[in-house]
Image (cartoon, rainbow, N blue to C red):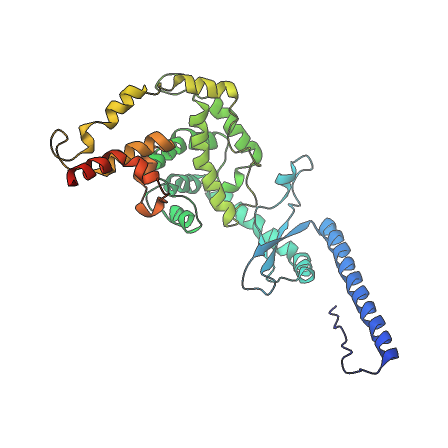
Length: 345
């Protein structure tokens, strides 16, 4: 119901009329509030009775800046199934930004949407042994794959070559065998229990080289590769939600674990050895330091020392990525600047 407030500008002398129009406006506002309240109550009843839920999806194609999608409950889901397992994995656009119209669409199309979903799932089950799913996992981190291109277009960081190889090894060595063993043949089969089981499974895996359990840092690095794949499918509404909550994507690392990791790391070089390295001839072109100062290797060494970045991260830096702060560049290049100044005097 749309209420149009009445203007009184055309009745300057109508004092009694002004009071009457004020009452009419108040009545219209009250009626509009009652209609909205009634629509909300009817939606809650319809949601419970027909088993669906609506979700707003941002879109500039609609006046409200969003449209509604609908997800239905699985009528065949067992009562003891977890809440996440009681809903169908697909979302259907209602084609409207009006909640009342979306409710009508959800009710009228429920049976046909559920039936078609079941038919598609049955056909996939007959011919799908998981190879298409596993093929997607293998392809995801190939150089310039369509998945990585989509990630880049959506603001995700690039994955460097060494990291892609690590993700590939995790997928081929640990992830796919685990999914096969648990009959996980599609991305929608990766439920919360499956993902939690993967974390538990990885904690019991022993590395082939040393025969010891994998470090939690190594496990979490592999899981991050898998979560990126899951986020891609959630972003494109190919799965209804991620199979883990906030802070549940990785295995927990205790303070004791961190202390062991630090203990196994090589000690930091003493100051005198660092000074000797930074005074090395490699920072100068020519033979034995007699050539001109070359700031690039010196800056790379100082970046490693000062900011804790990895070699691969520093290697991807561009000049435009570095913000010049007054005094900092002088501190980094002090040796070269001094020697250049001395030579010019």
